[in-house]
Image (cartoon, rainbow, N blue to C red):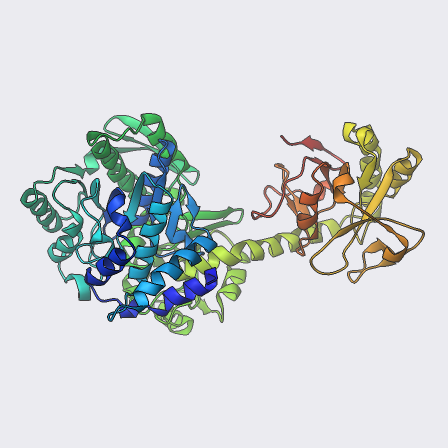
Length: 602
């Protein structure tokens, strides 16, 4: 079984087949050895804030030195996000191996487990194999009858903010919903409760009393905001100051729940130093929760999908962007209260770009466009999320992508590629407007700088490039390097996946892009490990040494092979941006040289 086959198998038993109850999950876990009985848990239920609360607890416990498991749903981009150990997703091969084992038992059951039940069993086995000290376990839906509630008594049962949700399953009053969520509170655990509406609190407190469970309530009066802006926030809780990387007043309230949970853990013998709490809150990351994907232009992503989320978003906008109007890239599910969501966010909107999330439950972009236009706000419908994102990136002012986690996952996946394309287009236009005289003078300055570098003096073999179109021209440098006895090698791409370093013969030719390259039949292939100095071109760079190439990624695949080389970026100053968009495979360089600067990076 491959990782993709494992995911396909799991997703074949869709959410629509979910039937509340613990019998199937218990039977499946028992068949594989009851791994959950050998683990310790913090169990987290609630209507809003569960994921952020789990992320903060996980970050704090990792900072305290514990080996942590984290179980959350749904995922944003990668299915494997749902099961993490020490901040790392489950590897695909482990997912496939454990799924193969679980499948044997699941397929033998008369009443086949649902998708969520399968994932829960796989996660429990994985956390046991990884010897987790403690697992932060997020409830899927409800609490009492949720698959995660097969665990024995947790260390702490946490109930976050409650609201009306899944009323067809959980009941149509806050009291009934609190009763369902409170099902995770078991005799022998500690409980932490978000100070919710009185109706919900009465039910939760009654459950704690009936089960003799000590409880803590996270109270608004213990919190005070000290600073908040787009760079993060600082708050005090019971007189102690803390930083928080997550944005929004609701995240401060979630953090207060987390701090009460830490106190509950300490009372049960867990060692959680104050420094770990501080660094965990400072460094925690949780995608698609008022997440700033980019700052210039400002682009914020939020996976909120119900009125409570929209209320929190509205408060965040008032706090962080007072008086500003935003372009909303929006896509919603038809079974959500999207009319109420729109009522809450339209006061902050300049216009709307409507898209259809990738879900069978999605409201079509045309229907959303019609709804918004009928409210008197400018809106446009786009045929795809990519089209909507391109339009949003070309709009004026800040952009907010909002309305669905399905939309958030898609945006988060394609955003870097589309932003890179926009940045390339912007910088290439700037570079192409430089006059011939300006380019020649700048090239001459850079060529004179290079021989003075220690890396040049120590180099025997230098990898460089021939200028193409309006690129910086290294011809004068190449002439000097040859006089100094250096071996010069140049790039050649035999296909769309590889780059070679060639020591040229007598002839050159233009490749399929029109770039001058050595004729390979007359050239010698050089081992990248034998290269001492790489002079690397770019489309754009920033002051931290990040580079933006043309998009094919040849240099990004080639540079790691030059393990002994000093890597220097060569560009015009006009190609500098405040920040270029990079991904994990985009390697930084050791230095940047333009006609105006010589910057080295640690």
